[in-house]
Amino acid sequence: MPTPLAAYSLSLRVGLGPESRVRLVSAIEQAGASIEALVAHPDRSEGADVPADVVVHCIDEDHMAAVAVVVGQVEGVRLDEVVDRTFALHEGGKVELRSKFPVASGDDLAMAYTPGVARVCMAIARDPARAFDLTIKRNTVAVVTDGTAVLGLGDIGPEAALPVMEGKALLFKEFAGIDAFPLCLRVSSSDELVEAVERIAPTFGGINLEDIAAPRCFEVEERLRASLDIPVFHDDQHGTAIVTLAALRGAVQVVGRHLPDLRVVIAGAGAAGFAITKILMAAGLADVIACDRRGSLVAGREGLEAPSKRWLAEHANPRQARGTLAEMMVGADVFIGVSGPGLVSVDDVAAMAPKPIVFAMANPDPEVRPEEIQGIAGVIATGRSDFPNQINNVLAFPGVFRGALDAGATAITDGMEVAAAEAISSCVSEDDLAQGVIVPSVFDTRVVGRVADAVEHAARADGAIRLPLSRSGGDRSGRQRFGGEAGVGAPSAG
Image (cartoon, rainbow, N blue to C red; front, side, top):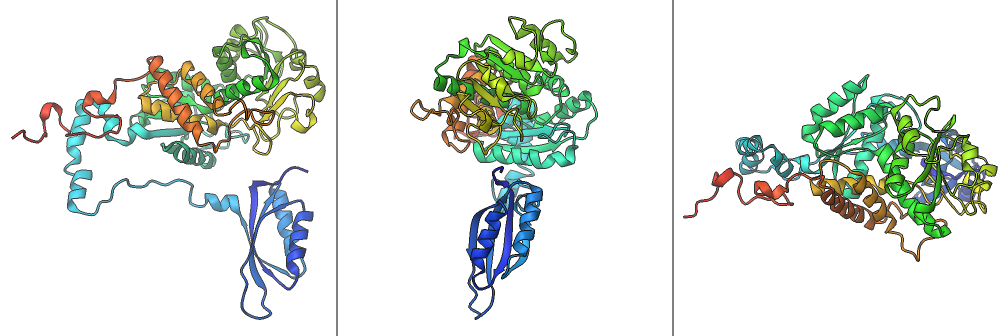
């Protein structure tokens, strides 16, 4: 039976009659759910039911409904309230805007708003780069989507995408201290999406593109990277690629191989597969073959209308190997799946090189179930939180943007992405590396700092930074001794 998850959890308020607690626990467990908490609140009234709160994890929505019915039928138990904890967490949204300073006096108002703010406006008008010193721009990222490829749900529209974008903004703040704002745009073309982002860009220090369907996502990112002077990062591509490379760096140590010697087969030629191929090649891997549902991508093959597929056919697969996904997997060292459920069989994995590395990352159902290839694969990773070695983008994007913003980066380069992957993998020591531990926990507090430092250093090495903030009289903290140019507004020397 699948593992009960917090994503499908209930909070149950019940009244417990005499000796009903044991019956309640037994009924919930027999229903296949797990009890995460049971807190009784004894009532002093003699003979009264004892109120209690129960937190239960279930498998899916149907299971949640079934468990609620089971609880309501337990002898001696009164079911008073059923709350879906995930929906309760989203009530009213997950993020909010807060002030950094109190406005408690006329002096506060005069400096924060009119008339004092006019001096700051004019300083930026004279030198627009000072917006990075004097506004939220220096630490603010827009999380942008058109709602066309949300999670595994498809084109569900901008309103329905908002909970995901809010969640991304929450993670930016919690993990990296970055103020991120969700922007779900109702657009009907790449032109409209690009124009919308270009128009709102003056407010932000970076753009995180999210859940935009291929091939639109490639064109939009390419055009925005060309037109904007701030970092633009499509997380579904590059975040996935960075963490995949980090995990692969750990996996090769576990199985005793070396990155440059690997033969890699990738199932999926969309956004993630394209970016993974590129970052692996940037990291020095030569033999990388990308496959779609027709088989390996090779020059001259049919079905290469998408620019991303043409690039993969022309730049990857150096041996120009032709065949199905199963045929490409024979003798391969690594399989990376970013496609769909059930595409790979146990026999396909068994035909790979000894102790193969298998990253079956389709979510929620992987290309091959991990339990089916235990003892065959040397290392297994997935995109799920209920299996070891989760390839989770949260290991990458907070630190990538933290480093880019701190460096004053104008773009995200290949060098910055490879540096981020190396930093993530460095958080797992040789002593800790194991089949089930090839990447750090997303809650490892070292990850964001190491990634940020590595990205900032790489940005400077690649020359992808604007002039230092201090050129306008400020410093990295944004503090000023006085606000004006050439002494305007400066205190008198006497």
